[in-house]
Amino acid sequence: MGYDSMWEPGDAGVPADLRPEIPHPARMYDYYLGGKDNFPADRAAAERALAANPEFRSTARANRAFLHRAVRFVADLGIDQFLDIGTGIPTAGNTHEIAQAVNPHARVVYVDNDPIVLTHARALMAGTGFGRTTVLQADLRDPAGVLDAAEAERLLDFDRPVALVLAAVLHFLPDEDKPYEVLNTLLDALAPGSHLILSHGTADFIPAEVRDRVTGVYNRATAPLVGRSREQVRAFLDGLEVLEPGVVTVPLWRPEDAPGPGAERVSMYGAVARKG
Picture (cartoon, rainbow, N blue to C red):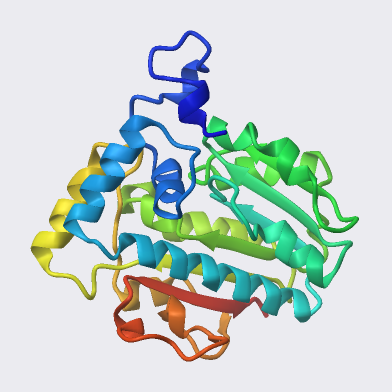
């Protein structure tokens, strides 16, 4: 059952901090993926974004497929702890499902600032293995708070390598939120051998007028959208060992099948990097 069928804007049962009347990027992303956990305002905003750039839906799906491959890759390397920040609305093939399929004892901590994500906590706890799966409500813009919450509850062992997952979330932090400093704070807390799984939206392949129409939609949502260039995305990885094939559009990151036409112009970069 979708949340739109349980709660409507103005419904007294809606938590005050859910703000269903204002589009939320996580719920818009859920709509792009064909999910039902979104409100009318989210759907209307998503449709405006799709009208400006019809590839939003295929890009979201390509990003999801990248996440699956990257988590599986890192888990195969022996990483058994995952900190997934900005996880969004749970859907098929969540980080814990992929990681625990490789190692049933893998631990996964999800972090998001949207209350709707917490309502899915029970479903997330039903992992495929015996590892611990936990959901925290916290904000990426306060990385120290994220780390303190995870450490206080002993959810992760920061003396051992962790996979930090930031999939399609840093592009919701404008420059004034200091996204590079946010990421460095998180990375500084991680042990050598930790890995970063990163994907980030870009406007490198779309006309300026399309970019402006899309950013206009998100400027009226709970978070703006900042499409950064390949060079700007690569700068997030400074000081890390960037694993092959480097910073590429998400369909080109270690594809399992031959990428389709236009894969090199999908508006999302992806990379996996290792902390030495």
